[in-house]
Amino acid sequence: MNIFNKSNYIDSSSPFALSKFSNLVFKYLSEEHTKNGDLIILCIGTDRSTGDSLGPLVGHKLKPIIKNYKDVNLIGNLENPIHAQNLQETIDKINHDYDNPFILAIDSSLGKYDRIGYLSIKNSPLRPGSGVNKVLPSVGDIAITGIVNVSGMMEFMVLQNTRLSLVMNMADIISKSIYLSLSRLYNERKQPYILER
Image: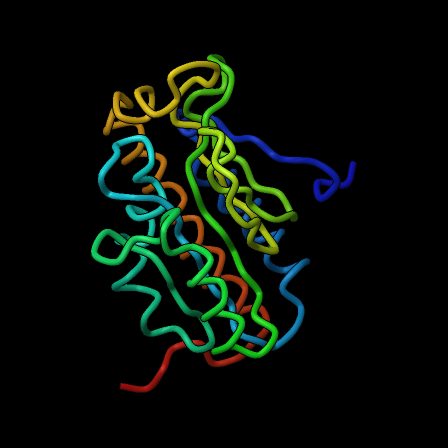
């Protein structure tokens, strides 16, 4: 079965979550990011809401690692979050500053009760704000989402009352999966990936 024809879900509480999700991220990057352009890791969310802090936390964890990688650019972290107010401006800046960028977009989402804690990856744009009925621009060639809580009613309150331990664990798995995937990808292509200091 072709994994790229559907969303793929991994339970972040599984003991094999990191292994399984990093393999998925690697497969998506190796299949989809075939050109030599810049890879943009766009972490969306805000540090003002526990449930919506997944993206900025991933960016925070990746920041000291990604800055040394050639042709990989990280946008969005705890200090400089990408959220509803600056998302369109950020997309415009990416399209202006980079030639044909390839975007890996990361955000939290709401879903069914039995999917809370699950990570998802798919080769289609992310639709930020859809879980809280906001109309925001879609973005990304690959989308990673983490289901942090249940959808259906009072979404803003639900996001505010999401457990930080859940979000932190998901951010750990996503950031480590991206790091492991990039290391494998660049090593298999036998191309230099660490910038000279």
